[in-house]
Length: 519
Image 1: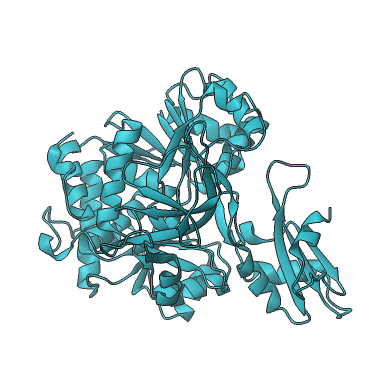
Image 2: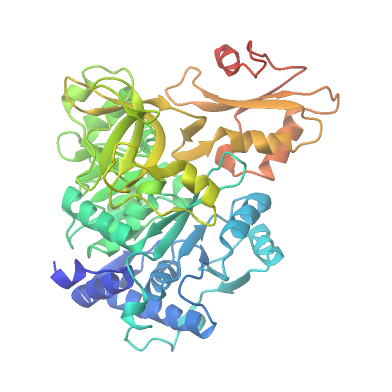
């Protein structure tokens, strides 16, 4: 690989170096069967960058993108990086209220759209005074000149590259800010860990507003590989999705375990389905061992099966563990997380005190991939991005993950145990149960509420909501309908029960354990 494509201080220059090296090689395989070369993708991105500058966009201004995985959408992300304008990929299926909270939090100067957009999302942007620009060949043509769009020294490694919003316990989503330097470090790690070369084709099945897409986009396009864009519509037909991955020649796949389990359960994924795939990477939630064993039976003899872990706040991934047959000798629970990547350090703490080997503690992460904090949210930033209490010689920042883990003394591997709070992972999405409770509490007639995550006859959990109300007009259907106007589909409880009162513990608080014990 060209050394100029590796050693860069900002992502705009990094991509220009890769594009100069790769030229007419395929950068994108698109949903309609067409391809886009690196040279063309660079041309599109510089065209968009020039247009943004002509609109008055400055370094540090936030740009929103509704991304349907067209070439212009990827080019828009690259354009933002080249001019130092942080981008945030938005989910048009977010209910207007939640999308509005995200827009109010990051205050984008403009929202770019690379395809058709739903009317509610469009109206929400306009209600918040955000200009919406539809990307099209007409919009991006005749603006590229093949040169850097701004002086190269104006964008530096500490500038924010992107924002990624996650669920917030106060009911307001949190915008994680990740810098150019942190992503560049991540790109180098991904290249080394997965031996990525220009011959690889990396799937992009993850939505662009979802943290897992960070691996897809950056590991592919900033290492000279090909990115295979797989749209959301492909997920509706398991056999079609499997066939599309095969036809695109994907060599590396990354998704949540739920999707792989779905493909196997529908009998769409067989031994001969993906002959080119050499690594199946999964993360974002635990992979139950009974289900993982089925994947191992299909691919274990010819491909890497890699369990990855990492918070959004730490640039997507901080550990990667190769599954082997001994991990499946006992089918209880989940596989280990493994060991932290070389560019991370971790502490297991009880409060501010390190725990003994084998004991459970909260994982606290340190290193160059730890993010900048929550955008425009200093209060929540100082709660999670804190000084390392074990470092007395100088200031060192660490991120408190809230994940309870332990090092197994027998193999020195890291194992996930649980959470220190009410955050859960559901279908790969990070959800603060308090955000659902906050939405329920806004509904007239609801006096108390609790949301828990529990497993009933399944390896995967479901969201259960319990509401206390004295209203005779309130019913579960109306409550769920109200929630759908405030929360995205993956945050809507599967079960909702209305009671006259909720159980209390001796301290007078809602007894969540008793609710969890109810089946």
